[in-house]
Image (cartoon, rainbow, N blue to C red):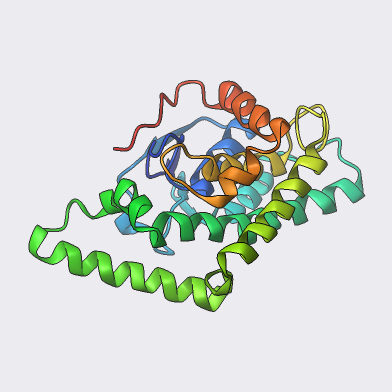
Length: 239
């Protein structure tokens, strides 16, 4: 059976990682039998989750998992979309992954209050005498990554302007449709739910959540997708 390696529910979400949520929703859409396992992080081929073990074939990275599902199981995530919609859906996914994601990382890891509510829990297995040092080192690495990527260089008002436009664009693209590209979910919806719901975590204060909540169609979309695809996720309390 196919195994998806995950972090597990946290922060009011089906999983702590939007990439894991994306991968699991892709599996739900495609329909192959699968199970989840929270014990694979130390063996992750790229040092990140998610990855899958599909009858001995290891595939890491949520997008590569999608390509694997399409190739092995012959499932077309974008069936029914026009060529223009297929291109737009793919670019929309990448915008979420390369824009929304980094602002969520910054909010969780760089804000001291948010860090204590969330990522600090990842260090519980480290003995106390060295835990603060480990936390400081990883947070410094995250800040350096954000600076190199560019998100860490924005002033708060600049960031808010960008996020306001990004949330508005997502709301405009969704409109009054049930899914982002029509009446049935496509591959982009797996990414959209993972990253928009991740930004809306009730555990953290963050500008992106404020901007998303200005658009009722986005908040209704997240609630609807959760009911439809993750009804058994519980309240996602931090564990």
